[in-house]
Image 1 (cartoon, rainbow, N blue to C red):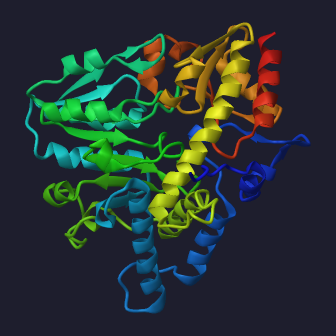
Image 2: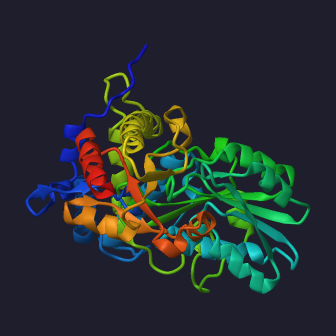
Image 3: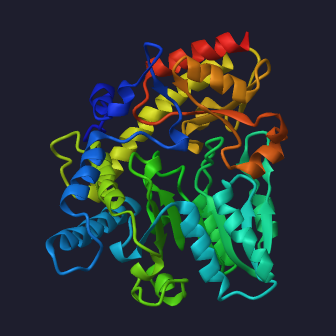
Length: 417
């Protein structure tokens, strides 16, 4: 039996120039991954090379434009390999939020006043606000509650919110605030039982787990490349028949063919070159054995298995340490036996120090974290912490180490005293 690929932290970290950053003479610990990850050298070089060799607009009869068109096609193929779909089902845009607003407006053209969209209290507002603006057109938006003790979705409440007028269920695959991984497959089955579409926000999920849109049963899925070690580019998967049928808002001379007709304006072409490099970087993590030199899609699956193993080990180390420090509350799933149900993203509060103050103090010591609501406004309001500084978020990704976790725990223990 083939041994699973294991990550080599030394080799991985050598690929990321930013990880050499120092604060007051000490190495920086980048525990801010949920807000955006650092990028490997290959991504930086791909973007620079594109600006030198292919810096032109699309569909021109000359060399740089032809190279640009080829780069866009490569990026579409790379994202298709990452998501498990066809290249023609990949739409690019400036970010997930913009793409979701555009999709919501297009879908609403087929809906009538009184039709319903279901969102959740666990989600980033980028998967709530684009649907709530449709209330101006008479669309009814219903919000699924959470189980606040462990910050998981209340699926019984979801079932009650579904009905004959439900047109779409919008859910995050993983919470960017507390790390909860939602049972998207089951939610998809519930949506289809009511003949509703399923939109999945995979922004936080994408750096941590392999995605297969077919097995997930989603009709649309959005993610952001800068969350999985690439540049600031958004990507949207849409089932081909839906992309072809719906009518997006666009300028008149733009292509009427999918997926291009969904891509308003000129895209971030150098960012698309970086997107391909980011996917290739991830695939390279799955090529750890000579017998695993197959197609990129297969190498990505192997890579995410290795990433998952590494992050679960870090998460267990962090969780065990936090549970041993007095005066701390961990929000979300805190059972070490249930790490498969969450990403390695933890939000906490210290009884002695408000989250913004704690994040600032950690930053001064070279440990980068976030404080606030992280745009998961519905969650911090539901937990009753929005008016008191929100949460302190610690986000681990595959380039983080045991030593960084231990250093964080030492500093948090100091702050808690």
